[in-house]
Length: 238
Image (cartoon, rainbow, N blue to C red; front, side, top):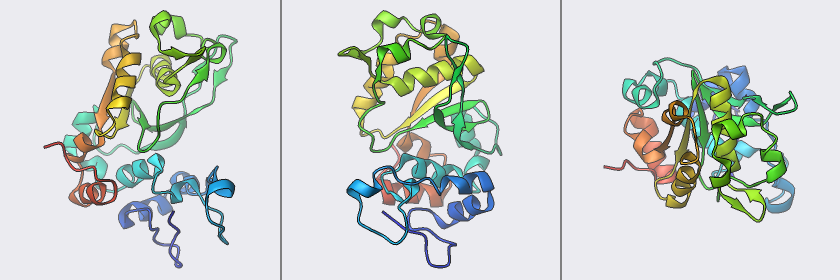
């Protein structure tokens, strides 16, 4: 766990350039205030309430360190890999409003929206979460998008729920979807393919991709690339 410095202009869990950019953007800055859900159970007492983005294990902090850096989205190589134009501005905690069969929508957040790309970021999480069958089957487009009998299930629950939901979001919004993973997590890569092989719509399947942080590192500014390697061990795949 890290805390902001006394002057409030730096934070131990962030690159200085990324943190300065976050402080200048009101929407990004609000993300810093999200209280850590396990603070009372597993973290030492502090005069300051621990925040989610204080944690070195936070995939959201990793995402913001990389994509809030002023030079990241000027990289033509990175933007070409992501299939977006240079100079876009990311939205973190995007509410995709995935349609439900009852006419309402799911308000669960997607980690990041970048132009026409939705992103799910993973760092230390053990899986893509499981969810009860009745909740997953309440999505309006589930049977149109997926061959449901083939979707992975364990004891009546759908596994890799986050992937299922985000593919449905990409379908509803007619955008692309990418999940960023650590190359040292082949289990999560296998989870990705176990869901993707169930997608019935070929054009949607081509709009979905899995990318490794190590792979993305090649297109990042040198300062961010060094940060990824030193803090997270995500050196390039070369």
